[in-house]
Length: 114
Length: 401
Image (cartoon, rainbow over the protein chains, first blue to last red):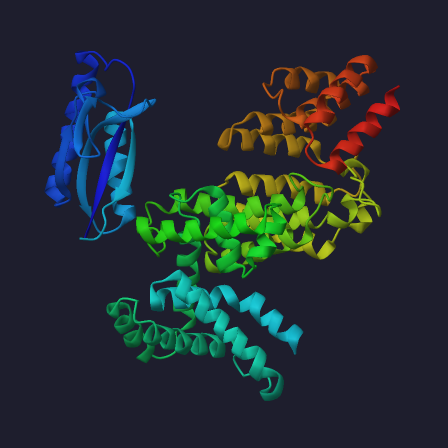
């Protein structure tokens, strides 16, 4: 089994209102439960937006903390799920369920073999 | 003998690579081993003669060469070497297994996680046995660019862990679509080169037809596979009539139909009947059927336009799109007159497509609206990417004034 990162690509802008978000999160939780039942689920989490992010960087001997994110983009990591899957196709199938639940693009990337 | 070896190479390269990818689990090693084996064939066959089974000889030799390489290269992981040595002891692969190996390789090359240009390049390289230089030449990119594209694609297969297998039943239709798209892209690039002076690149058409035949042999129960092969054969049957001796384009209506290849038409039409009998019509089958109707007509005027329009209606239902609607309008013009067709064309949002303007120009011309026709030609000419198409449009424009 390999581990894959399912990176939820969230567009910049305000999140949808609670009445829209709530059914989406319910569906996502259902997918997460399905992953747990299948033994595919490792870890998942939603993230605060880039406005909550700080960037830490070593500059010579000094460590500098700045307001994040380090580049401006049209989308950011909104959250992620780490799964176990036999191969890429299996990981893509799970990502398909997540994107259907969320309506957001999911980047699938394998971890280096440990 | 050299020609004989070249023929074996063209026919057996993909088969051998497919088997060895399974044996070694490594595309680069498989390719190197197969190339080593052909190098050996070039040295040995001229004096020893062609072996009874050239394909078997190549696969066995390549497997031994691959194992030698693994033994030499201590950097490769030991488990790879062990796995390969284990496989090496098993006997000759059966034809069924080889068939599956090639299908697996096709689906690997055309995996949706690879960009389409990479899918095309890999398919031509690994299954068609075309050299990097040949693929680069066919797609008019510099050879280093194509080499890099292939290296990156193979790296993606390795790093992303793209599986070497035929997709599960549930995923098959979606994945098969990607495979058929790649083969048809290769054919179309050969049929109407997207740029450059020459209209047709016969070698690419031939390669696409060969891949189509391979797929039809491997998946005889998939009607769209048969449909695509039929479509390519019927299109290919008109090649000789499609250009003049000096390379100028001749439109379907003006072609000398005695120069159409009857053998290809017969084969294509038989395939159309065979796939439509399955009653699962898809876009390739319907386009093939439309071409089959054209092939039946002794003259353009004698074409069964009602049936062509009907087939386009079906095509629009399964694969809606403005380009299909434009082609349907061309058939409507023959059935119901240019005025009806023009009103259909004018509704389409295809201003960036040269054929949209070319079709409008032709319809306006037939309606005697010469000034508007000239304007439509003027819009079409700069949009046409192929020089032969541009010349034809320019000629027609000139004939108006």
